[in-house]
Length: 229
Image 1 (cartoon, rainbow, N blue to C red):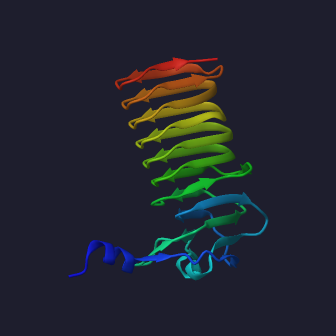
Image 2: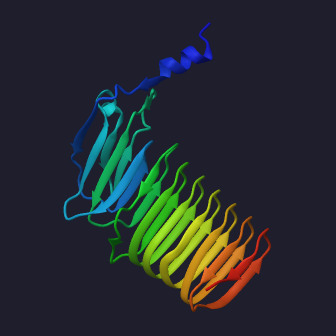
Image 3: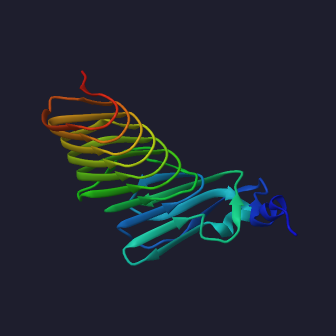
């Protein structure tokens, strides 16, 4: 009979600590799905490509492929589990309409602001922190994961629904109109310049700032909803 420890050793593939860099060729896309156990950077560029920095013997576990409108970047599609010494992926994109983050253990960051002319939908269902910076006419966010969310940039309309666990910092997302529905756990910071509506069914303090008029507030959860300077 195989022990759990032995079975785990058979499933896990450890990195050889020889870190190499590899470029993965991809086609154009407007939807991005990220499922990476490591750190993923989103970088705006005229050329779409994926640059991977990871253990040499685990490169085969990293996939980047197009299907329809979407680019899928993943380290989680194999039966065996890679245990990286380091896994750092840079995704270069021209534009994106939908961003879907679903990692078992990974962070997604924007090192600089990405400017879009189209509305953006973001869904986070991962375990890890997500730090994004976008300028877009409208941004919709659904958080259903575990980890902290940070949003920076500018938008006319921000619509956010929180069903996850972790803090949400969107005070540096300069939005004219904000609609926020909280069904999760964690403190929240928001900014609205013209108007804001807040529904709280979750747990945690919700702080909002800016000159926005409080259009609606519904407080059924645990925690305060307050305006701050």
